Image 1 (tube, rainbow, N blue to C red):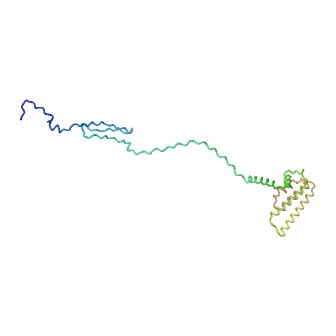
Image 2: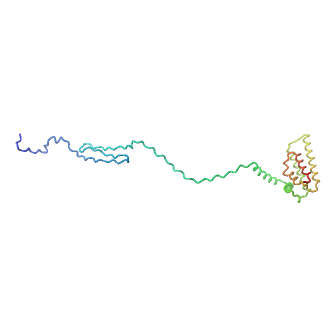
Image 3: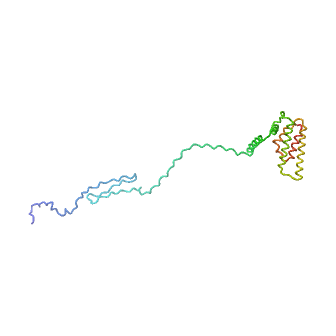
Length: 235
């Protein structure tokens, strides 16, 4: 029915609102997302903020975190380990200087001493008396006849040792050599008997019948050296 003119139209009931109002979307009741600030990852990383849509959007905005440019850098190799320098140790004292190798003469000296000691052990009383005179030339306490017999005895012993050292000698030559040595020995003994007192060269005679007898290898050379000494009567 047509409305009467001049009368305002009656207010529409909310229940009878037009369909256009119902068709419009309702405002979103979702609480707007508060922008979240990303924790700074370093001095070079910019602060990332979350982007949110306008109020009333149906989906919440996902915060986007900005990637730091330094995160794409390759991992740097670890710094080389610096070793701690060793503590200074106490200075080592220099090794003592080693003695120079002994010369052959130094080796011979102890051997000579040992030989002399061994000789003193095995020497008879007669040999000790002759050695003492060879060192001191003192015959005041000696009986000349006894001393003369001692010299002749030692001379005979030394000659026998030298003949044996030459090796076995047979035949006419060996026999002739032994006869010559024996004859020469008797001649020297006779010369000693002729002296009423110890001769002038008694010290050298005692040396040749003890320590210096080895200087002459053959019996003939030894007898000639001894004869020269006995025949010397003065300087």
